[in-house]
Structure formats: structure tokens, C-alpha cells
Image (cartoon, rainbow, N blue to C red):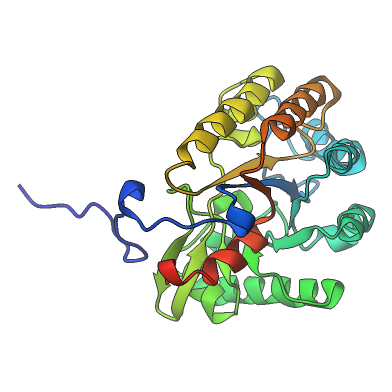
Length: 297
């Protein structure tokens, strides 16, 4: 029988977390915790995105307006909660948000939250573009965010996690420092691209409201329990090896009134149980600290 490779990329090698050199996060912390808020736009009449009912003919008024609720209402519940709990956030920003809902970005900017590049819009899948067009998109997004925020974004998450085989190389070549699309570890991992090393910062594929609420039909209460269960496990694991935990939120999902109560309960309890070994942070700060560690270079 022919031998098949276990991976068809050369971005990283296998590494068991129990065999790695240990390190601390700032101040001797052991678990780095962050919340990512996906701030997204969609195209009315040319729809790509999660649906409540399997989709409708274009224009799909029901699903378009359901998602729009997040930018108009749901996100403000998130911001009030983060302020109450004194939790920083990572704003994963579609570039088109600067034109569609600038008031939302103003609020995150005022808080001093990190802005992470999240493509132009969730109405497209950049990994399906040619290499030249994907590069053009990544450059356009970087330049617009640099103009608006005064600095280029350090990190990138693709809309729909839509990557091509060239995405890491293009990101590195365009001076992005880290990527959130890879979900294979509880620690940052160096990606070896043709242009040099790019850092993969852990992003939650599971503690993410889209796959749970839409893909698996979980309730807000179940998703809140997942946040708490993941936190307790990773906090315990971090005694041996430092870890990263992210929670991915979309304002049109966990920002809905019947679910938001469960999010507030989960994050409030997490904050109360954190103790002195949890670092409430952003993926950009995780990237910067990890890069400075001599033991992982």
C-alpha cells in the first residue's frame, strides 16, 4: 500500500505540549485568557454567512437583518459587560466596518482594545482568491486599518477561516506578526513560511459561538457552561505548562437577549474564580510576550 504523509504542509512539526520548555506569562501568570469579538459585515442580496433557517432567496431579509442586529444592539451588551468586569477585548474587524458601523469601532477604540484584521467583509472567502488577489486584499486591509488606527494590525483572522496555502506566506511578507486561523494547540506555535516565521496564536474552534449555536444547535446556557468548563481545565493544566484560552463571540449570537444572560453569568463567574495566575489580555499582547521569550525562539 502507498504511504501517505500525515500532513501536506511544512508549516510546523509535531510537538507534544508535555515535552516543551516551560515559561510564564507576565507577572508569573500561567493562563492567558482573551475574548475575541467578531465585528462583521455581510452583503445584502449576495449572501454568505450563518443562517437561522437554512437561507432564503435573495434578498434574504430575515438572515441579513438578524446578523445586522449584532452591530446595532448586541455588541453594546458585550461592551457594557467587558467594562463591568474590566476585561480587555480583541476586536476582529472586517475592514468594511469602518464605513458600515464606525460607531462600534469608536467604542472599542476608546477602551484601548486591540484591533485585529478580519478581512474586508464576511461576504467573501479570501482563501478562494488567486494568490495575487489575496495579497491585494491583505494589503488593502492592512493599509486601511493603519490609516484609521495610526498603526498596522499585528494579527489576522480570515473571514470564515478561509485560507489558501499561500496565506501564511503572504501575511509574513506583508509584515503581519501573527495569525489566529490555526486551532491545533493551547500555546503559540511558530509557522515556518517561505518568507520567515509567523506566529500562530491559539484561537477557539470549539469555545466559539458560531459552531456551537449554529453548527451543533447548543443553547446559550450550554455555551456558557462550555466557557466555564474549558476555563477550569486549562487553569488546572497551566500548573504544568502555561496555556492560552480564547473565547470567540459574535454579537448577533451571544448578544441576543435570551443568550446574553448566560454569557454574563459565565464571564462573571470566570472573573471571580481567576485567582492570581490568570492574565486577562489580548492576542496581540500574547504575541508580543511570546516573541520576547528566549526559551521558545
